[in-house]
Amino acid sequence: MNLGGVTNGIVIDHIKAGRSMDIYHYLNLEDIDSCVAIVKNVQSTKYGKKDIIKIDEMIDLDLDVLGYIDPNITVNIVKNGKLADKKHLALPERLKNVIKCNNPRCITTTEQEIDHIFCLSDRELGLYRCLYCETKAKKQK
Image (tube, rainbow, N blue to C red):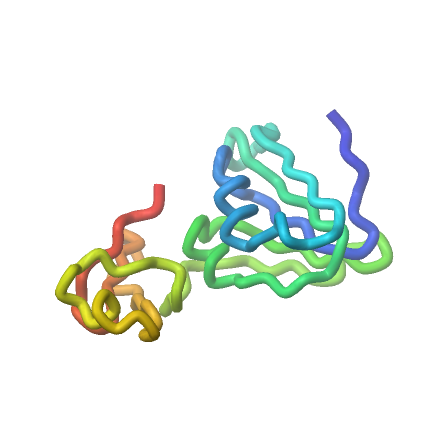
């Protein structure tokens, strides 16, 4: 299968196979008025299989969300048909309104306008804890 390249836009590469639709929804890509291509289960020498998302427009991306979903993702910025920048992601130190706290006693449960903020507490395990009550976040699959 051969899909055309991006002239000016973004290629999100090295997505864990099967996670591209999660990213599509987290980034609200259904709301943009440009061509978005999702390629699933592409052969990869490094990962076996991977997903790729191609966006035919320059948009602001939440790199923290992408790093949380899969820290192995690379974000390629393409300008005039050439790679202009390549960003390697990692687990973010802090997440704001990405994870919701499940603790019924947490202040975020009773005070609706308070942001849900989680901090990385164990990089090896990918463990996040609520800033307010220190409840563990459910791990991403």
